[in-house]
Length: 260
Image 1 (cartoon, rainbow, N blue to C red):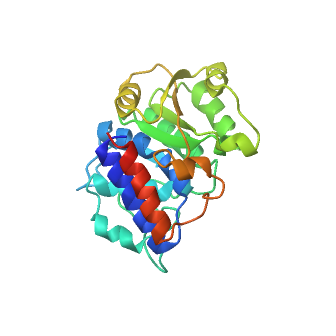
Image 2: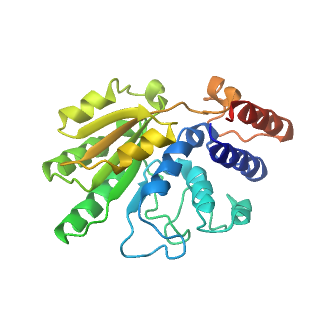
């Protein structure tokens, strides 16, 4: 784990302990993905509504805390502002609100909807002949929703080469309708598919920036709770659990042990 991603995880643990909120295992699986995305897309933290920016949509909206922390890392707002996460009337809700948080392009959380929004945006920009890219991160559990595959059929039929779908394959679907070999499923739809470690920032950046002739799908193989053995071994217990002070110290020790 890189030092910057370790610090982001530590910050999330602190915030979760204070707020009593946060889906830590699900958030931890996407930190490197989010960091890679914001490292390569066109965006301007000082001008979040810049018309030339690329668009990123976090469809698995319960990982909002991860997005907040990465946005803060890139300078969209002060890291100290995140102390208000989950508080009454706070702008930093447990699911992000696009009207309240700079850098958030869509209000998500109802799973299966973010990808449809992304397809609509990609089509609109194709019609306008705009060169911006549209990216969305979906969860594997979220892919149990039929709207995901309906959106993929529309996107591939329209050859939306400006659309990139990143699939967080952290095996959340193990307790639901299991989707084995997701890369094969997306290829069957006609998408350009690659499979990478979702915790390898360099490989993620490489795949995100590759050109495509149709919809590009990156299957990112990740681990729920990555970086903390406690979260990995007890991910269902920690799905909505926040640490107390003793547990926080243990989780941070585990992160330090995994940092390179």
